[in-house]
Amino acid sequence: MDTTTDTTVCTERRHSERVECKRPCKVLHPASMRYMAARTLDLSATGALLELSHHRPLTTGDRVDVLIDWDQRGVVARDTTVEATIVRLGTPEGLRQRVGVSFLTEQALPLAA
Image: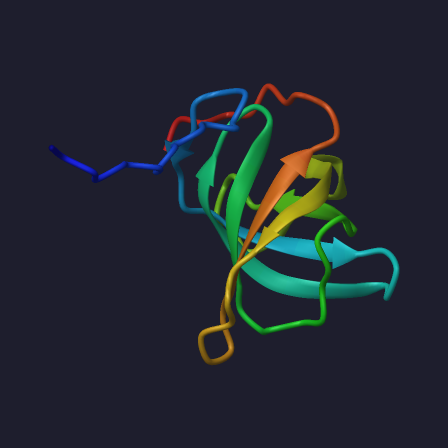
């Protein structure tokens, strides 16, 4: 008789498919009025995984503005701002930290790399 029970449950919480897309970006934390250098790792219409260049004291639930440099010209236009909420904080690795964000409104993002 096998008494082993598999209690592992995988639940997909994302509302739309993520696509790998690495682009430079900035993250504005309105509560502290600080910008953080970052890059996107993947994107969807409803959220993104970002890698911050410096560990900052952020909290799940914080609202942030994400400004993506789609043209990779080094200048991020203010009209690229996407309002988001932090939904996941990765463990800092040196000066880097991965952050999952959920966009406040669904985006029609130019996902073509």
